[in-house]
Image (cartoon, rainbow, N blue to C red; front, top):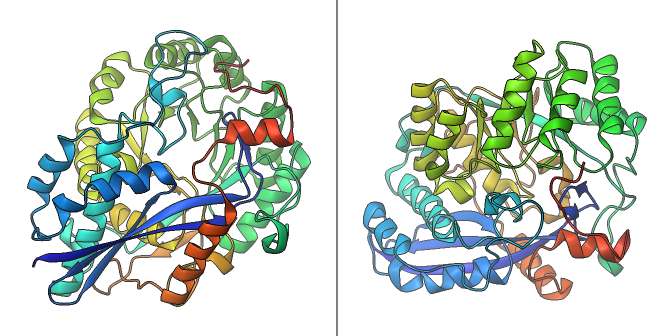
Length: 442
């Protein structure tokens, strides 16, 4: 089945002013929609990181894609993996402690080290969607078959400034309100659970001094009860000593503690300190472990008990199913990382989780934060029931692009003026002119 065309559509979607250790979300998040068209007139689609860098990389891959059989994915990887994608992107800024992994500093989708994997991942998802449509089966069945029919997700809480995202005439209603202290975080969680039915909750930390974030988790525990698993992710904002202090203060309250400190060595130090204190809370990572090359060190160090996978930068859906088998072999848990995304990425995540038996933790998702007006799928927003999304039974990813909505997303991209993600610049623009991302901060 020959691919005769590749269509790339950059889009923008409104994004609320969410806070993390990286800084502040801009009024728009950027995505790229990739479509592969077959000689039979079928189209497979994928959603990936947005902006000039990812778009340029995908365009440079065009000669490797058009004219190739959609099933020829192994040789497509050999072609893509041998190229120097990511030109002009960040490697590792000169800041913070020396010797830390580059991914600790770089926003997801913005680094050049994993650029070939990101390019291939987007092409692979679109190709699998195309293959599924051509032979009439769901992507999860191509990956080996579904092991579950519903995929649970975790409610993703953020410290948030007032505002609903978008700008000027496109400014959106602030549906969630400001959330800068524990009481507001608890109300945000209750709203997430009421609207989506989430059975577990994650707080993006690393924004305020640790004592304030400890108070937020304890307030969530008091409000939601012990049956709702809780997680916190400060994105490496704490020293190992601070992380041990936080872990001890939250002993028994967390399902896992995610990326409390930079580097595998730091994670191992935190794990040892918590175990010495009698706390066996697992440590999870998606900054110290971002590729297969990081896995041996994670196993040797003992500092990571849960890996947060992400098909967008690990190299695609099949790569994560392979990671799942590796994690099972070494007794490591598996969860799923999220970035700002729309329904096309969500459905790829759903198919992947369905076909990965030991992805047993509820997956992260930013989906509740995106506005229904920006969805690009026929039928609009993906529905959650009991905190989960049903695995489609239709061919491919089981969804279709809404051409009018896609065109609106492209027009929004052309108008918004943003061409890359820079949370640090947004923080300086709106909060503190002298702010810089430094890890660890506390």
